[in-house]
Image (cartoon, helix red, strand yellow):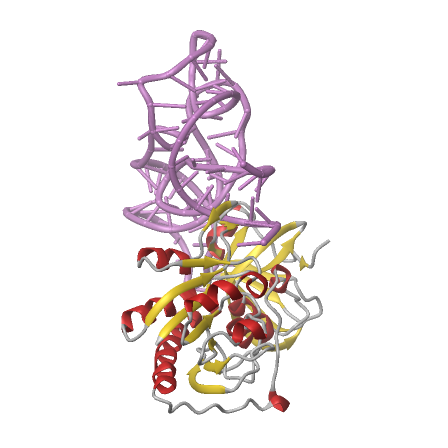
Length: 312
RNA sequence: CGCGGGGUAGAGCAGCGGUAGCUUGUCGGGCUCAUAACCCGGAGGUCGUGUGGUUCAAAUCCCACCCCCGCAA
């Protein structure tokens, strides 16, 4: 089939590359978000754009595809369009362009975890499993009928970043399989059960702020879920402190003073939570680089009794 | 040219014009029922790069370049 691929970040670029490798379909063009300042102010093309250019595939970038894209896309006359973390909502006018419509690769078991950050939220909420869904795009957010799903277990200490890595190949395989089903007319479109739908917002920087009043388990899940972006953090005095990784030292036991460092030494920094105790293992001060807690305290001691807190 | 911090011993940091220091690790010795224990001693550094500038003297001031990181996206 003649395909137009829409996607932006690494997750999309990986799936894009597998689609190209499969060689079964002709990719007419890649649509991606405009080049934006990233990486400390330098304007950088998206991973999908870089990959497309490497393969001499035309790249289209729209500030707002629903307003500017219809004409150009129509001229390409695609059989189907594929989206993966593209980053813009598509209007009905766009959806109507390809003969087979648009399918989307979504990293959750729909109808659960609709929204832009399904992987991270699944980890943050302590899920033990998630997956990938290939769905037909309809007007609305991740609400169209599902063509197929693949289930994946979440490791007990797995970070969102690690789960991303594992979900990418699963998503790529599922997409290729779905395209086959569609091309041969064997695809089944199962409507989502709206009553079981859950939706979560995109992650914001502030979603990484730790509330020490929560349980050690909840904070542990948060730290994993926002790693590597936006990163969990707290404040030591008025200086932000990033928490890259931690372990649950004690699951139970209520503390009188959540956020207080009860012990600090070469085996880590132990912090009292609302319930249970968390051991910080990889931390990073502003302007410094990430390091093991044991190394950190050699240069900047964190005495017992220090209390981490929210923004001042 | 978006704003800002930083590159000094294996690791983490201090020093910011005048003999290169601290914590930790490491090696050797001692002590102890025991401890992330304690005591004594040693090794380990072209102070990011520059046949750069200023100076009697530069890790320290100035310039250029490289690299790392925080904020903002």
